[in-house]
Image (cartoon, rainbow, N blue to C red; front, side, top):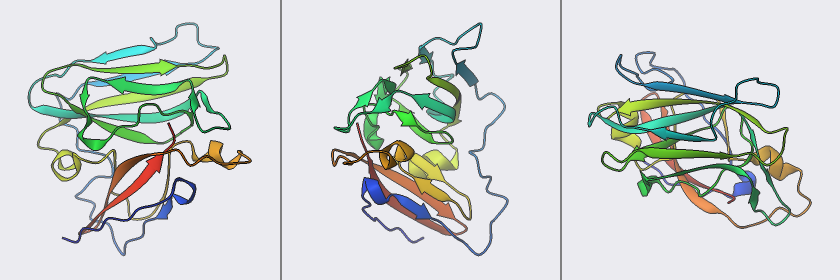
Length: 207
């Protein structure tokens, strides 16, 4: 197994991952066993019934060690000219061994994060919408301790197992619109698995 640590700047965190072939026995998304709980949270201005801005995720049992939060749709808050988030997504009461950012904001469609349970303490997720145009659709899955993503990457904030693709930092599209991109950042680690090769890469996110 080859392991590699590379430091990437927030403004250049676009990584193209390529492999010759894909072992389809290893699914793109984490393996979810039958008793895994799944939560869908949707919130937008035109919905008659909006999801709560706070979600408490109770551990199903001690067999589950983390949750995966998929940002299927995510436009919450924005980054100001000084690089600070106005509104956004945050979390608490998790084991922060994978250095979870204090807040994630801006446009983050298709991104995801892993949060590790701190024993049996429930994980709390918060959505602080900054304007009426903010919206999100979030999928939350509990991941078993025996799942490969936990065993291989419990210190990583994100886990990728596709043969090709582009990995961007959080809020990257928002950063492109800033005239003077800020340098304030919080480091985090990505775990990339391509065929039989595993690579850990470190990047950073604005907070």
